[in-house]
Image (tube, rainbow, N blue to C red):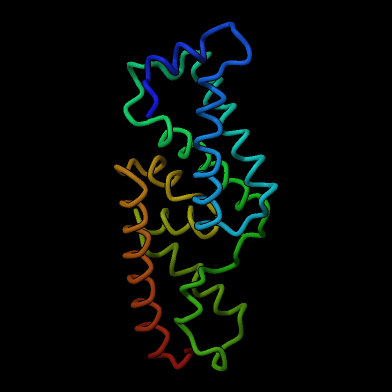
Length: 188
């Protein structure tokens, strides 16, 4: 849709306002809203602000030569949405209280058998006992509220999907350990 070289030239041009940049902004704005509404429970005004911040970050990256035609390996849309997704995840993380224990762990125990503080302590203890990389992945996601892209970067994984798959397999491992250990002791 947009030629990379023309867009880079438009961003670096001194002429204001620039029709190509305005067209790029308007084209992806509605698509970003659809994406954000589908994947996040956030007010429209927040989505609007995050889109504007993301577009400004794209502009600054080009003007500061952090993003050039040579190192842009994806479309402008993909690049812009990656920035936006990170900002959306940061907004969620910063504006929602952290969970005490993973949601999936709620299915591990019978609520009537032990109280919630004991369960939190059991889960916390078993997460630490899992060993690398599972304990680190689960701690980053559930306790530090990091996004899958941040976890992939921290852990050196190829992409978000690899991090997500690792988190899911670690949760299954955690469930098995807790069920095996604590059912024997009639704690759950």
